[in-house]
Every structure is written in structure tokens, then in C-alpha cells.
Amino acid sequence: MSAPASPEPLRVAVFASGRGSNLQALHQAILCGALPAQLVGVFSDKAGSGALAYAETQRIAHSHLDPKSFATREDFDAALMQNVAAVCPELIVCAGFMRIISETGIAKAPCPMINIHPSLLPKYPGLHTHARVLAAGDAEHGASVHRVEPLLDGGRILTQAKIAVLPDDTPEQLAERVLAIEYPLLIATVRAIAEGRIRLNEGTDTRVSWLNHRLELE
Image (cartoon, rainbow, N blue to C red; front, top):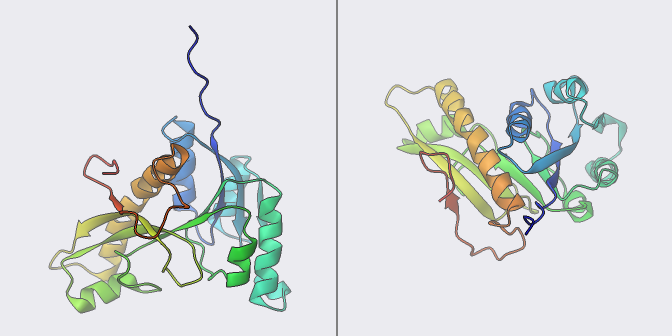
């Protein structure tokens, strides 16, 4: 008896504004067989972003749109989603995409979107999370992956990973340590979506999965 055919890899598009370190982590996981996915497009609002440069060197389809070329945020988002739809993704990953996507943009997205955020949501949506954690005296910090919905960093939380805040931590040190757990968290989350262990259309009361010390989701 022949073995059942493997499912088709999950078609993933990535939004990124910066150096693309999360993009690179996803791609390397795919290349080594740890992530059953295919990167079908990289999209950026920054022409000189490292994410676009990486996509070009790896021969991944990529494009740039300049927000200043559009009259409104909604116009930019509509054009972005039109470009994304052309590569037929099944999942959009916002990985260091430094723009708030409008409600119009979310509605026009061709598939679900997820975002990785450097805090233990619902704490500290928005910017400067590491400094805010230190100012509050929190004992723990971390990262969260959530579904993108029309509320800043307020969509359904899918997965989280945490680290201890050390007595002599600075915002920069915290940022570096949180980034180190972002990579395995994002890879594990996309893998769980690809394998059907996380279903993005379930209700908001679905439990959050935590990344454990073995870099697996509990």
C-alpha cells in the first residue's frame, strides 16, 4: 500500500518593513524541512528594506509600494491587497510591518493575516514595549502572535512565548532577547496553522498555545 500523499505546503505571503529577520527565519525553516510552507511573495512599504533585498537574493517574488504615492491609507491598503491576491496566498504574515492596516485593508485581504508583536498581549499594544515593561516593573516579558483584526494588536491571540525580566535589563537587552524567541514562536505558529492544529476561524475564546523550552507549542 502506498503512503498517503503529503498535503500541499501552505502558501504564505510576508509583509515586512525592516531588515526581514523574521522572514529569513521562516524561509530557513522551510529550506531545512521544518516548516511545510512556501513563500509566495514578500511585500514592503520600504524600497530599501532588508526584507526585499533578501527576497531578491533568494528569488522569492517581491514588490514595493510607496505609501506617499497614495492619497489615503485605505487606497494604499487596497492596492497592497490587490498585489498580494495575485500570488494566491493562504496566509499573510506581518513580520515587522510597521504600518497599521486599515479596516478597509483587512476586509480586502485575500486570506487571514497574523502578526507577531513583542509583548505578552493584551499588555502593551503598540510601540516601545520593552521600555514600558521595565517602567511597569514586570517580572516577565515576551512575544505574541495574533490574528490581524480592526484593533491595534487586539486580534485573537494565537500563541505566546515568554522570558524573565532581569534586574539589570535595558530596553535594548530585552529587545534582543525577545527577538530570539520571536523566531521559533513564529515558525511554530505557522507550522501549527499549516498542519491544522491552529484554526484561524475559530472563536476568540480558543486557548492560547505557549512555546515551551523545547521550542514546541504546548
